[in-house]
Image 1 (cartoon, one colour):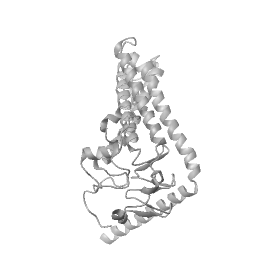
Image 2 (cartoon, one colour):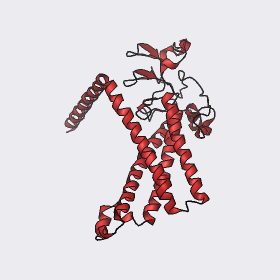
Image 3 (cartoon, one colour):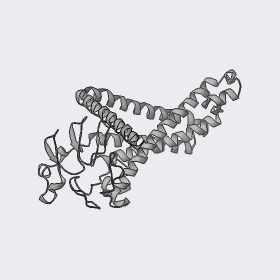
Image 4 (cartoon, one colour):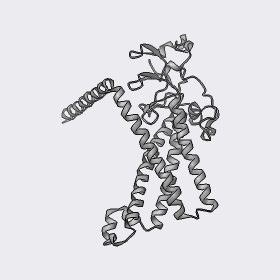
Length: 302
């Protein structure tokens, strides 16, 4: 019975490996086409969702909850606009920040003698790259402390731009949950909550006789879209915070080799000014190093 279980596991692993190889081969052959479709589609989806929720909240949800001429409404609108600005300004800087090994000065493209054993050879780029730098099949370069390839930024998230990606996710999560609160209160106040669930509709008899049912259905649909956006943003932000907290990366989330403690780990990403970087993507916050030399908390055989 045990041998049969081991055989099943090996067969499944073999199938997964074949799928992975087929997928990677597909990426190599259709790299340009994939990027030409995937990146614009991702950005268009992001712009559509954020823009729609901002306009909907400012023109419909908030005026239905408070006086549109009052100070509270104006402060909420100003705060919402600031969050949207922070989302796209960090996304923009993240897009233009080159985090590849080739962005290093020429004299840093060679390993110091005492750290030469930590560097590895990239067969695709045909160069030696520092620890934690890995090749991206879409970008076709090696990125310093490569975390993952982001379709929203159209490049890899790594040592030099992870700060902007983290702040982008922070404001994206904060804004989506704030909008979710607004929309939930608006749906509840307008009596549209019953159409948010088919079972509630059936239990209330014939709600279609309500002349405002069309508007109630629309507001409940917006609430659902908002909920999905909040869950997606929150999940990505939580996983990114966990990786920064551990000083790990997307493919080695449980790795604690470079864990220097929570505050030091966050400084590795946010720079010298730490959490002040939440105020603006244009705030200068130098990183502790250039991404080629990483302090380890434990020694491993290499």
